[in-house]
Length: 345
Image 1: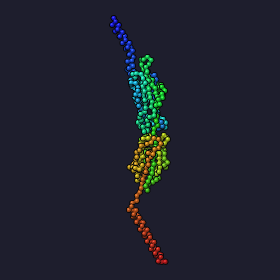
Image 2 (image 1 turned 180 degrees about the horizontal axis):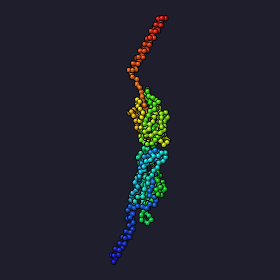
Image 3 (image 1 turned 90 degrees about the vertical axis):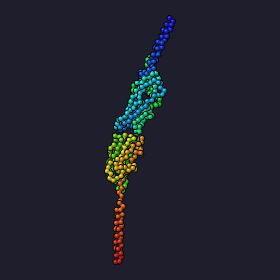
Image 4 (image 1 turned 60 degrees about the horizontal axis):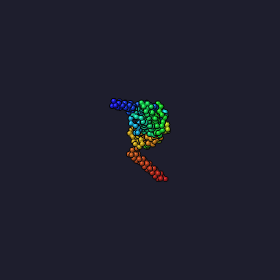
């Protein structure tokens, strides 16, 4: 009888222990929490002073804090933001994407922090990465009052560790911003040679790797439009200078843009050099715009048109001898005339 009581007592103890451990074993498995606040945030990407056609993709990195407790899964993957638009006036271009934490599961309570930074730009020479801003998203996981599950809250801090407003829905934004790097181009025309015409308007075709139009400013008396785009011509004569893409307006040229000038008018015997290098009959030079804001001297192009007529040496000698003979004959006649006049006297 005593033996039976011990068995019953032991069984009851096991049953109580099982009742106590059961919820804990449930918590040991990955559990989707109930969200106390919104479960997503918004990444906002601004391009200041945007103008013309913008084709660029910005990439972002999400890095888990090394001190996070184990047991978190399904953190959001690194997103990207794509710009593929044309802006007709200068202003701020803005796009966004959602960073969604709602699919995360957890095995235990704790604070799970993730740093979000902008890490890439497909054309960083024109659209630099915003390396000054970074944000931390922290998911705080706690037991609910009845110990039947988890409750998660999402909080955001900026790079200064200042806590931003608690997320309500999807209206909390991580803002990244930078302005594109613009520049402009200058092209000058000179002529040289003893038969070169300083009043001749030389014509060149302008090629550029964008589809935008740019302001063309020149004091040349040759006929030119006030804007220029890919495939248009520019006409310049001796000592003319033209600027393509004025500083300070929405017609600047993105850094890294490829452009060229090609001789478009008839050769007419002129030899074309661009920046001191003699060109083929077309006279083409391809360059890449550099600089980061105002006019950069590396974007200056000088085109020279040379035409010189050489006098045939043999012909010149023949003419010279002929002239000398005439002079000699004239001198001889004058001598005899003076002598005859002297005799009569």
